[in-house]
Amino acid sequence: MTSTHFHPHPSTAPHRASRAVLQARGLRHAYADRLVLHGIDCDIPAGQAIALMGPSGSGKTTLLHALAGILQADAGSVTYLADRPVEVNRLGTEARAALRRKDFGLVFQSGQLLGELTAVENAALPLLLAGVAPRQAEAQAAAVLGSLGLGGLEQRRPGELSGGQQQRVAIARALTPRPAVIFADEPTGALDRRTGHEVMTVLRDAHRQIGAALVLVTHDPEMSARCDQVLHLRDGRIVGAELGAGR
Image (cartoon, rainbow, N blue to C red; front, side, top):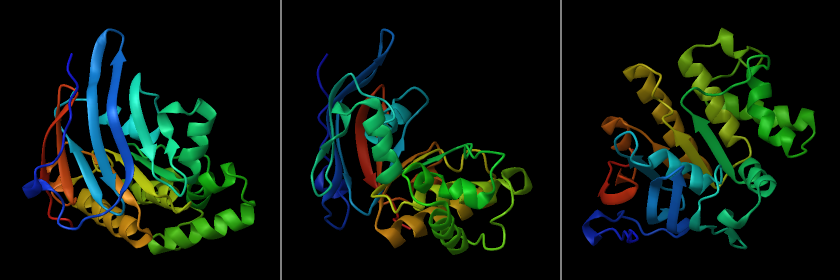
C-alpha cells in the first residue's frame, strides 16, 4: 500500500507560523490484520490546538495514542522536539510512560479519575508519580484547580462532583506538570452541549495560558471549529485540513 503524505495547502495552513512540537512521519499501525494508520505524516505546532475528526474507525484515536506514546506504532516515527529531540516511537514502555508523566498531559472522555482520591489528590497524581513531595504536589495541584474554578472543592471525591467538574479535575491533572502537549480524547463526549462548551473553554484557555499544544479527538464539529486547525481522517489517512475559528 502507498504511504499517505499530507501537506496542508497554503490556504488551509494556520494563520500564524509556529514551530512544531511533535512531528509524525510514515506512521503505520495495524490491529490483527486490519491496517488502521496508513503511513501518516503530520506536524503539531507548539501552542496551537489541532482537532482530529473523522468517522468511527477512521484512525483518529489510534493516531492520538501513537503521538502520545500510549501505543508504539508498527512503523514510522514520532519526534518530540524538546531541547533534545526524542524519538517517541523508539522508546520502551517505561520510558514512554515517564515522558507522558513529565511532558504530555492526557484528558479522556470518562475523566478516568480515581474514585477513592480527592480532587486535589487526583490532580496531583502526575507529580506524585514523578517523585515530587506530596505537600508540594498537592499545593501545585490546588493552585491549578483554583485557576479552573474549583477552589473550595479540592477535598471532594469524584462522586461528589458534577460531570463538568469532574472533567475540570481531569484537565487540572493534565495541566499540573505544565506539559508541552495536551492530548484530549473526546473530552466533551459524555457531557451535555452547554457543559461541553464550558469544558472546551476551560481547556482552550488553559493550554494557551501555559503555551502547550492541544491535540483533540472529537466527533463534534462545534468543538473542532474552536481549534486552530482541523485534520480530517478517513480509513487511516489524513484526507484534508481546514482552519478553525481558534477560540
